[in-house]
Figure 1: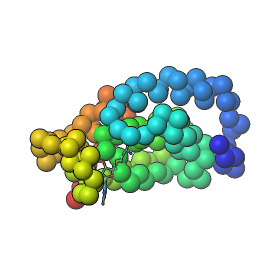
Figure 2: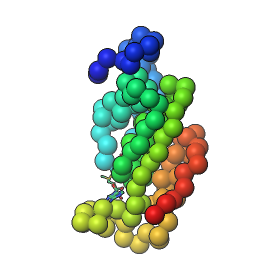
Figure 3: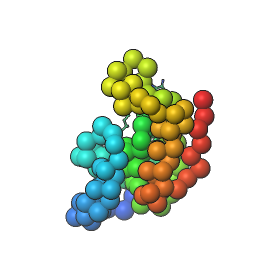
Figure 4: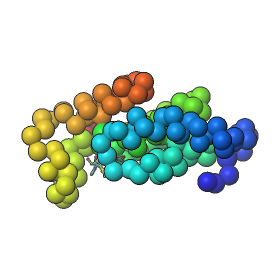
Length: 129
Ligand SMILES: C[S@@+](CC[C@H](N)C(=O)[O-])C[C@H]1O[C@@H](n2cnc3c(N)ncnc32)[C@H](O)[C@@H]1O
């Protein structure tokens, strides 16, 4: 990992490992692509490295990566997480079309919201165009 931002408290690596082990299983149960180790990196970037506690994620799907980032901000004690997605899949990605077959117009977004709610990461998630 990179050096923590200036003024941040020293990182207790054992405590971070324990925290990742605590939150990881529920996050990794969300359908998605993000590797668990990469999730741990996102968490630490949001919690310790980002110079400002604001994260904008492009491409959230059902919220797996969003959850790692949002947990990092929450454990940081401040922050704002913005998740951007069409919630309609990537147009030229056949795997997305397959996974979304039979989905209604808001279904993927509602799953995203429910997944974050299930992890206690409530928010004013709103669907925009
Ligand atoms: C590989 S998935 C993201 C995986 C997710 N980060 C995870 O942790 O599993 C890519 C996402 O990008 C979104 N996407 C594709 N094109 C987009 C666009 N032009 N604007 C916004 N989101 C887009 C898709 O809907 C899809 O949810």
